[in-house]
Length: 459
Image 1 (cartoon, rainbow, N blue to C red):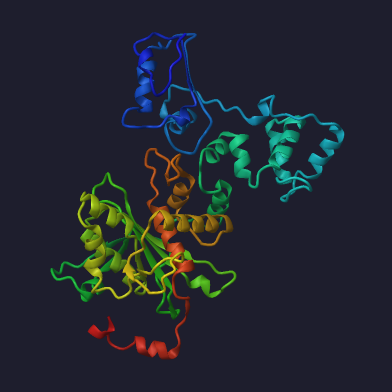
Image 2 (cartoon, rainbow, N blue to C red):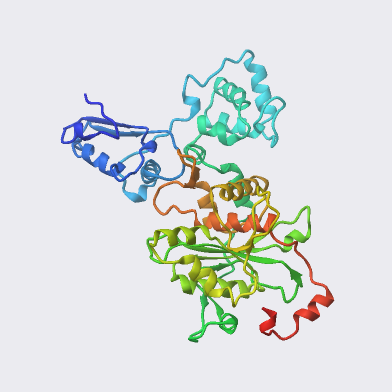
């Protein structure tokens, strides 16, 4: 028998084993020195596929991504030809998670009376139909009694599901340090997710000189595919509304292996109804391209949506400029179009500042402080359903966004995990709800002014 750790596994390399138990695999972090696949391969090669030999991967869920999650998904999906079988142990199979019931007849009556109830029975923090659900899954009265009392310790179901999941879906969705309430994500998804009305491509003109007319001559070509997804086309020519659209841009890299650039178009029309309306994502572009071209594509998309407020995150640009890895993104993207696109977002000092003198700069600056603001705002938007989100990829990123051990925020490490859509949306919603002029109907006098021919002075 040998015992070793993920951090120091060389002592068992080359051994021949009959049984291997990999414990708490979800917490095996991929680093430059250690890769979960490499550790397993060094041990697994010594276990022959013969009767009575076995390999076991065991862990709590800790999020819907990563090495352990991928292993479990492969084992649950017969089409992947996995070498492993999947076993889940629900809380009600564990003797520790049980509590005596004094009157079983009375308990049965309570369970039956509340089986269709969509609200919480008096004294408890879970819906009556949920207790009936776990009874049908096989939970005993004693397990249900423990659960309903233990549930009162937690404000939301997500925290309880982390400690006592009823199935593998709950186990992965609610474990680890996930930032967003997984059940609130489910509700938002069921309300608003839908397929795009159109796909499209942002096509820039071939003109060598780039100016105001270059932006006007750009086109959105609709088709069966493309990097642009559109759920609603712009219609400001019919509904005369000012401060309606904004386009928020999270800057990624140029190469295919880099982070994506995401441009999210938000329509604030619903906010005309102050207490019940909500901003809505109506289009989204996600892809890679050269950064000078990106600048003009962003301006073109914003122009397409009624000369929308163009909000470009400056954090990535500043960081890359300092590291000198892919050039001066800030200069390329912001200053490339600053003289030609009239409606670029400018930030002032934050609410924590005490100096009254205004200092305006292009772009939304994401730093440790402002990132906390926009993520806190996004948490409220998810839980209180404060915006309309149709994109299935956004829901995927919400599910895999976590607070790291060092306190930083980001997506769970795993295949095809990103947070670019999430950040673009978080910035856009922050500006739409907190830092943009009120949305309002355009008056007749404003309409007359806006119909004059555009000149240099207009900009």
